[in-house]
Image 1 (tube, rainbow, N blue to C red):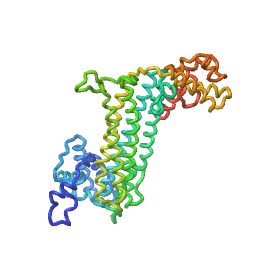
Image 2 (spheres, rainbow, N blue to C red):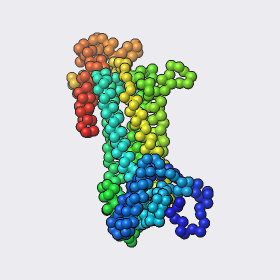
Image 3 (cartoon, helix red, strand yellow):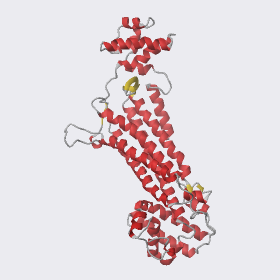
Image 4 (cartoon, helix red, strand yellow):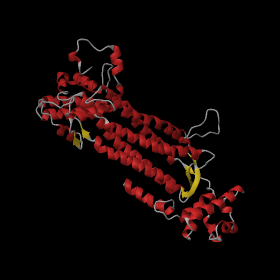
Length: 450
């Protein structure tokens, strides 16, 4: 069934049908029916249709909604899109009065409404999932206790930090991802119903009524903008992509941690895979696939931005292509959050102690605290490190004599500072890598999530 046959003397060619029909909007079925219920109620309330006609439409739509929610809705190959499918089924259930449903409405504002209903719900669901992953990271951070590892710059050991501090860095990234979804929500939460094809209607429609009944916070201000813009879709997909990038960064570390060269973590059997050839392998495939799938979601953002860049107002059929991109991005993120969350929760951490070379900055700062210019302190400690490294020794292997030779203000007691645990314990910077900071961050994160 199509919604536009009156102008045409012959039906669509099979090639036209195959090229223009896209069934990806079928997942909007429930949203389409709920939007139609609100529209039918408004038509009856404003007197555009009779109360009897409105009641009959509602009777049919209730039946269609039940079929949609139970998975029993029967699609037809002749359904051009979700909107025509609903109207076709309504005709089957209640007869000619079904033709009243599209009064004062266009597929242009209808599909935009469906997308906004879908994205509003999806935003809430992703927010819950991101929150759950942050909670999982907090729980793991508490489990690892005061375990100290090396932080890395340029993929080289840099400073000693609590492992919990490292894990909570990703919790804070995810909190910002959560904030982006919540910030986008008001721009999604705008009802376009009543904008019609492009310029509204001469019928006394009441967009505010449909918006209120559907729980929207606001109503469109410009009908052409309402049906011709998809920036809210692109913004949602960007939120998905940025969250996937966060997950991809965490995944990259999890892949490294699982390797023998790092040996930081072992992940549960239920969240790893084996090799078809090598019996010893235990592969972190979830993390690797999150990395790979992130590339495809970034592509979805690019597709949506490119889709909009040359469109004149108002609606153009190009916009049909937005749904596959948004559904793919949303589905990918939803599954990635769930799978990676399970992998994180299954982790057992057992990182080796970092090299005492990670305390080099501590030694320089000890000199700074004694009035030595930082550049001089840096040079003195750098010379000490170079000499030790040349002999295959670490900083903890230095002797009191070697300290004094490096700089006269270094004393034997300073050798006590040259362990990773002492380095982390001595750190005082707010938000820095100390156990006091970790405890404060966990408190702050719980307040944010609460």
